[in-house]
Length: 429
Image 1 (spheres, rainbow, N blue to C red):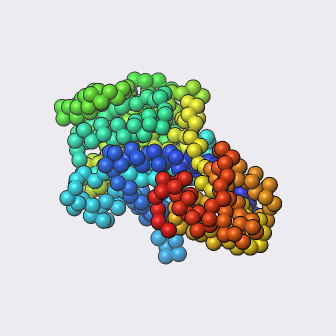
Image 2: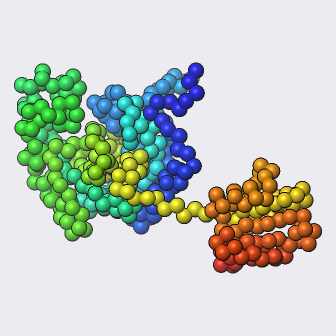
């Protein structure tokens, strides 16, 4: 029996959780400025949600999903990505009837994919994502890309590369698909089994193959840019114009296709070019999916979104030498000596916390010197000293850990005194 965390999962300990909290808080502030609202969906869905939403021909559905049968015989799957779940929730909860359109959503979710674990790509991964449902305006594509870039930049990342492509509309994709089949058919026996299956299921995904990426047929494959009709070309040009006026640099890569079946028109990835980041440089990726909501029996609804791996974001911060600020200090540490003091300390802790003051105490029965060392380790701003004499006189010593200054104050004035020192006098007893 193994008592270790399952392969591909990690424990996020308190010191690391502080970094996650900082990153998530900063991202939430960006989402608020862009007027996005949070959505939370179930950890698992009916398997069909991902089969229909992600696509049967994808590696996620074919190889990577954690699927199980519940006691009622229903096939359920731990979510491997967020977009299909959000689209299902959009339809089920009739968000398409919301008078405020488009619906702009963000989420922080655990995802689960059975793949070979490596740094920044675990089997349980943490992802931030956004989805916008209800607009076919290329300006919203630009806004989504801008939001992603803003999150990275405000966290301090500078070595970023935005890679952009279009997959065109249905007509453009069909024409390109036919050209890809014609191009790869003579070489198909030289390609991997996955590519051989993709030739008939989704030939576009051959371009996304990591096994055959250096095969000569890849370098001469037809480009989607040569098969765009007028509307698709205009859509792409308008998006690029919007990015240019916002000052967002980009590189067009006609081989960027993304790994999911539901994309059309815009596809993009944001990569790290930081030295030492690693061979897999992608930080975030996304694109437009105008037919996805209809897969869940919803009305025709255009959509666009992206997913951002938080593990990879933290890797990017580390690679660029960006330190997460450690500004967490304990407001007060209460040092109590003696049986009566301990009893009074419990009462004071309760009272201080009720008045929005952060405070802790010793629970190991340590002597005063050891308690002061604990206060120092916790980076306490003030130490509150309570001995038998203080209990008898109903006073308490308040010592500043920065200056060493110490005052004796009436115990009944402690809350007011600490509010003045820490909170500028806010709060009520």
